[in-house]
Figure 1: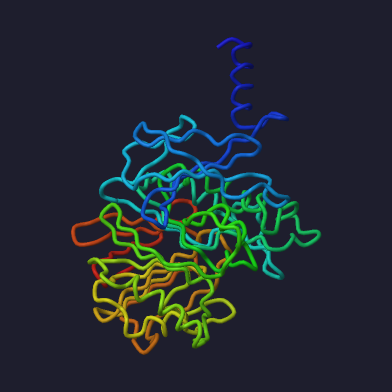
Figure 2: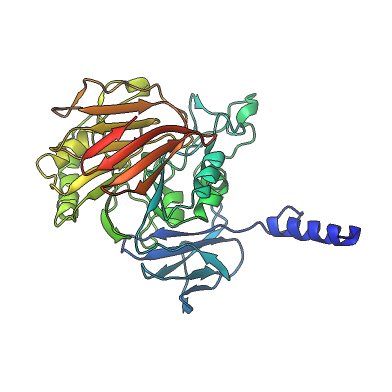
Length: 409
C-alpha cells in the first residue's frame, strides 16, 4: 500500500467510525423480541430518515417512537417483522435472526455504571465497570439469543466533584446517559443476536422510565410512562418464555393492592404453560438479599402473588436485581431460581444460601459468587449446561439445568 493509499484508507476508517470532526456517528441498530411474539427491528437516527428494513427481501415500514426533544435529540425507528425470517437487513446491513432451535443463550443483568447518591462507580475504569469487556466476550460466543434481565440505566446523579474515575460522565434519563451506560458498551452483543429485554427497577418512571419506553420497551410506542406493563409469552426457538414486569414489586412488603394486581396479571400468563417453561422477571421470586439488606428474603410481592398458582410445567425463574451470581434449587416442588445480576453494576457481598429457608421451603442446593461476569447456556441431552465466565473470560462456575434441578459448582 502506498503512502497516499494508506492515508485514504485511514480517513475512510475514521469517517466510518465518526471520529473525524463533523462526521456522523454510527447509529445503533438491533433486533429484539416484541411482546406480540414477532421481531422488532430498531435503529437510532439523529436528523436523518429512517433506514430501509427488509425481511426475506420484502420491505417493512418503519415507525418513529417519539419526537426528538431536549433530553432525547434522536429518534428511534422501528419496524415489526415476523418471528421467523431467515434474513433481516437494515440500511443494507444484515441483522441477526432467531434460529428454528435456540441452542446457545447469553444471559446478563444489572449492567450499568452506578452513579446515585453515595453509590459511586468509576465508570471510566474497565476494572471498576467492566460491561464493555463482558459484552465483547459474550458476543464472541456467537449466541442465538441474548436475555438481559433488567437494570440498564444507573447514572442517576452526577459524578462527585474531584472523583477522576467518573469525571465527565453524563447522568439523568437522557440519550447521552443511555448511550454511555448501555448502547456504546453493548454494541458488539447487540450485533450478535436478537435480544429479550426485561424491565428492571432502574427503568421505573422515577429513574430511567422515559428512556426505557422510547428505546427498549418491547411494546408499541406510548407517549406516557407507567410503572406497570402487561406480561407476555414468547414461544421461540423451542423455548417457552414468560416475561413479567416486576420492576415495581416491593421486595420486603406484600401490600395487598400490589399483590392483587400482580396476581391478576400472572393468572393468564401461567395458564396453559408449555413444558419446561421459564419465567423471566427482574426481581427474583425467591432469593436472599445482599448488600445493605443482607439475609432478608425477596421478593415478598411476587411470592404472595404466585403462592398456590405455580404450574407444574414451570421449571426455572431467571432474574437479576441482586448484584451477584446466585442459584437456588428447592427440589421438584418449586421451580429453581437463577440470578444473573453481575453484568457491571457494583457488586454486593454474597450471602451463603446453605441451610436457608425461603418462603417456607428450604434451599436444597445453593451457590453464590461475588464476581463480575456473564452466563452462557447451551442445550444438552436432558436440559441445559451453563457456564459462568468472568471479565477476563475465565470460567468461574459450571451449572447443569434439567427440569427443576439446578446444580452449580
